[in-house]
Image (cartoon, rainbow, N blue to C red; front, side):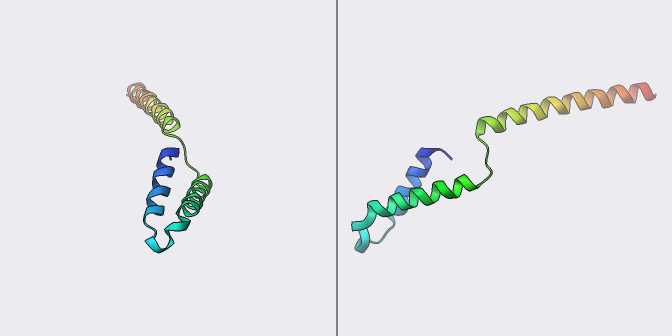
Length: 77
């Protein structure tokens, strides 16, 4: 998750706080930001770039496997 997304979500959470406790809004927003970052850090996530690289590797592997299967079928017949 991008840093901007965390900032946006923390801001929206802080905005949702009732007006009676708005005086602590900045503290709450920082706490929300910290909790979100901590929670996301615990998840085993990959970046979009890492995902796309692995997706390309898998596509090439599938192509090679299909070619080998076709060649094996030809050799068996």
